Length: 385
Figure 1 (cartoon, rainbow, N blue to C red):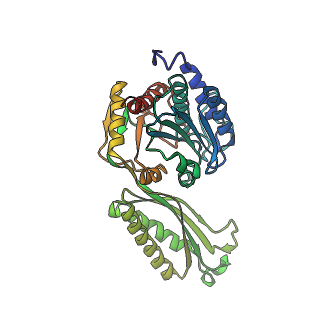
Figure 2 (tube, rainbow, N blue to C red):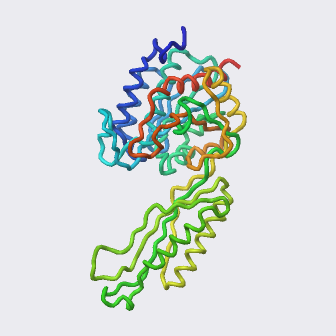
Figure 3 (cartoon, rainbow, N blue to C red):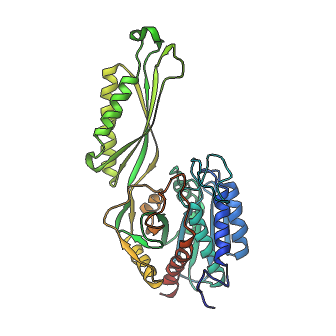
């Protein structure tokens, strides 16, 4: 059977059908750990392509499908994400989000469609050795999904030899394959700072302790620390008091994100920020509390995996880009790279494409074809050698 034609896998699934499937997923987005309808859509497609095994509810809502040759050989796994973002979409096309305040503005719908395209190819081109597993992972955006899958008995039984993942990247030529040895994406963590003062009547503010001054000082000081130790800090939100004009504010909350390409330096930077906040709060007479969440380690790529990705890009004749600097965003796929031989690569979404997490972002359907082809070339590399 001829594997590729001018459009994607003409004898397996027409490109327009894969595009329509992607757009259906786009129109019904769901938040982290609640991807029930999304999983149903995936199961409806996957069941038609007869993998040897479909494993549901892996570490929560994640889904694994396995194509098994029943012959000795490596197990390779491809991972994509299920979840959407809690952001209102501002696009006006027909397949825009039906769910208020939730949208696929990171391209996970396109990633899923790509892996579904690979499943269609694998159903018609059975592997000769080993296994190919496709992981549709829940809750990537919160950082919880990867850890749940890694702790699952299903993944431990599967015990993949190699794991690959990918992400569309605006700012690069369409379908360009982007790789980097070593750190590919930054480590990050969310820090919630709670400040507690003392309320009073607004006419007698000296009788209370208003956290407004400490909050202002903290935000200004954080701005001064933006590039300390190669780290970055972003103020995400700040809340002060309540809408009661007769009462002096007594509490405040600040949410920030800390980033560094080094896990160790991020810990060092976090400790510095904690001390900075502690000193200000003591000076202002406030009680304070810290809480960390959404923690992502740095994503470190395996060199052997990168060579396989580069070879696949060359075989399908798409440009390969070796970047010098790690991406400053974070990915919970980093947890996989810490435990397995694994790598993530980028797929260019277009040099002038809307940025990720923008309210008007949409995955570019034009890169679906080449994305599937690259994944299948990775499979062939293992199946033929």
